[in-house]
Image (tube, rainbow, N blue to C red; front, top):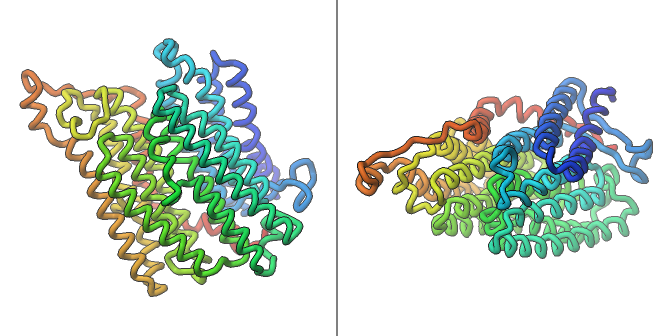
Length: 494
């Protein structure tokens, strides 16, 4: 393995950790530290992707002790893509957070606490995310996902409102229960195999104990990723957090548990057909129930939060599209949808936050009555919706196409029907917001003089617009992305 590859991997893990400590110790300089670390992590992720593209996979044994006794960091195409998505979205969200929690406006008493704690919590979250994507054994993945959970709960309650505190409490209880189930599964694996690294799991003989362990870990991770009917904590948590925190929670946090599920399906003995069908059925329930609730939502951020429930369901449908026999290929469709959702949902929550800040509220039925039009934020929201609905040429469209193509090849036409139903539902509930953007007749009738003030050209409006446009543009380079995801799949694990 080349030294640059090793350097970038270590930097991605320790740079945000050092930044989190510095941001906590130096709260007055936290925005500068946070923004600098976010850009540094982005540069490291780009460097790592370049090295993976050039030389392939790589492994670092921390402290010189490798698996199964020590800790290995490992990178392949999938993990590098997740690291790049996390770094890119995180950098853009950090730019928005500088305007929200930095500068003079953030020094009021109302925003003093969010300003003090947002940056260390966000950088601690970034440490956990990078640790998950570089991890090679399931116990360390458990540790890192708990680091993520601690930081995510803190970000949820950052606004200090009663609704946010209640949502954070529900989130904490769900996270603790999910962690206990996950840890029980990890313990069963160790009792059965005597090791926890992916290299040992990949060569294990199938047994009832390992299937039971996989089922326990799946339920625990389903709680953490808010898969229906274990989604009870997500809508309130994402809807009541501050805009930067909501973007991080929806775009990045739930992806860690999804990634671990994908890795477990790749490296543990094949699960039973019943477990794969269960994943698809729970995904179907998420698509239908989340869509109905999004249609009923009265607030913009609540609608976006419920749409996250539906899109998580679609990712599980992608994993189940071709049954157990198709898992060797269906993970790619799930990975593409994860990447597309991460980019688009980060943009959408940032845009929703800007719309609320400019209009003064996020009540959907009153958006078309507002005399203020945050034009760029509205455009960013629309671009993000293109990818989440699955319209061409977005990356979301590529992911849905892969789901339907794989399902048809396996003869599972019912998953095609579910995917198309979810697409029509998403078009319906996002159209509720588009109607508020486009209808100017009520404004002209209700506003004195019929004057509409166009706003939304502040620097902070360009961040979500750039991220949303990226989600659409990535669909044009889907073929190279799929080739990149395949790097390392033919080789073994250390």
